[in-house]
Length: 299
Image 1: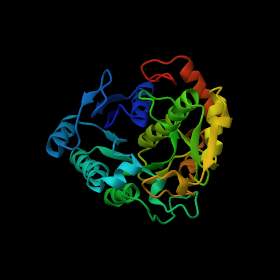
Image 2 (image 1 turned 180 degrees about the horizontal axis):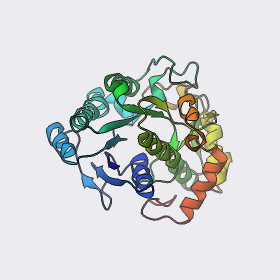
Image 3 (image 1 turned 90 degrees about the horizontal axis):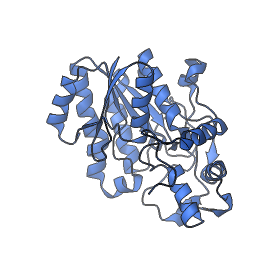
Image 4 (image 1 turned 30 degrees about the vertical axis):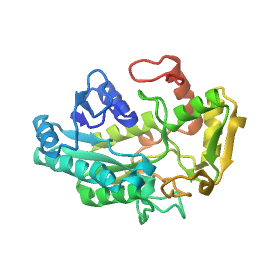
């Protein structure tokens, strides 16, 4: 299988490239602003140029884990949010279809309102934020011809060191304290497992919407304390505060998270590992950081 990963410098994109290579597939990844060795520069906002480049790749499958995922930034800049999360992926999805390539996009539990999570694929979306509405619009436009993976609270080893686990570790080490929302709940999802499931789904040629998320439904504070303990940091520095006190710019689905009936039905090789196993693997990955993993406390 020849695969293209748009956004290969991000945490899911990086692991997609690694998993694809380990499973014997040919893979090329792109970056927009953060270069890594082996990646090709591509600015998806240049619609014609990026579509022409993708057509020339003669790919069998195109993964699109890229986009503008800063939720509060999307709320402040709806035009950029729609461009990056709707117009750009749809442009490349059309280019992929012209060459017969399958298109795989990534979405979020922010398409739900967070009143009754965790949610299954059959539950009706009702996004609260600009980010959630853009992702839902893209889901509807792509339809069942594509594969859309919804995931949430993605954490784990990665090359840029931007996800919540890295932010928490740096805050506790440098300040001794981190405020976390006490009323937000979801299903933390380990990045390497999300990528592996995505590649397996691509190999099976699955279409439609599939939830790919961890098996535990946790509060943000409980999740943060588990991360701190795994890294040998003091969980006592994690302070729980209600979302309304934190001044976040975009509304959050407080009781979000995803159930995974479609994924589980495909067989045990698709199932996501529990948090304890993922944290053990996270520690192993951090013990030998290299091209794929940034050290936990690197600036």
